[in-house]
Length: 386
Image 1: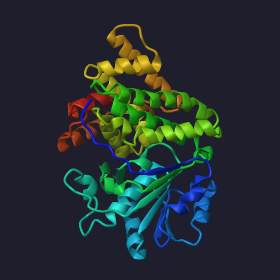
Image 2: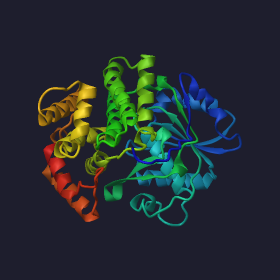
Image 3: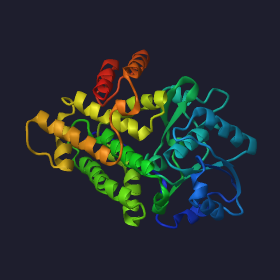
């Protein structure tokens, strides 16, 4: 196991009826900007719960944050922050709203330079400060409610980029599993797949003698494979909804990442599919990940075989046969979650593969736990998924 430091100061308030407790966590004298997405929170009652909890507080609102939040929309919110001197941000939504709110929090205090630099030059630019934020989570998926990460798209350049800084860790996040009850099946399927791949990015690398970390990761994977079909069958089963919600948070709050190598190539490649075609983030992951397993089967062999045995019960055959079976079981799980896993299912052709390959080459990007996925490997991985 590698050396590590781990600190996660996010306060989690979990359980039914917990939205009413938001007033306990925000400063009484703050000007609060409430951010949300397309308006579903006004239909399912969550908006009213938040407003009732914040009765008497000074609040303003910014809605319309997209499922893949755009830089352009976020900058409109930054203008509202400055116009009204907002000093606390409350994200009410899923990972996209949380991610957007993190960027708004950092961009509002960034200074005179273009805040896009936070994303475009993430390893050179230091985020020195950000407005405090809280989250009322309505869609389990990204783990953004308990981590320092955010992903933002820019429509004008067809780019989707990430940044991370502890400055945007939420001060608190409220997780009420009853919010799952009214989610569309597509969002639930996406949430399961997103959380599943988050775990795999931190698990399916190479062994470093970290049995506790492996079993932490495997416990989340097993819970997701058990919970996924149940939650699609009955969204109003409270315990199933609670296990789904907490699994998604645990998948990316940093705990299973400590002391082990991490990959994240699936995300990097998947972001390009979203940037060029607008495909749901989770669905890009379900497309790309089987290709990663296939093309990188030698460098990931030990962990793929371990994953196949411990999660899917695959114990017979040669190493390659075990890997093939494990890839097929993973694809079957995604398809059971009603997610298609081929580029052709989304009308993506070889032309897009060439564009992504060229962009990767131009940037000089190297992905994966070994930094051995270059533009040629990216092309091979995507071609495998046509």
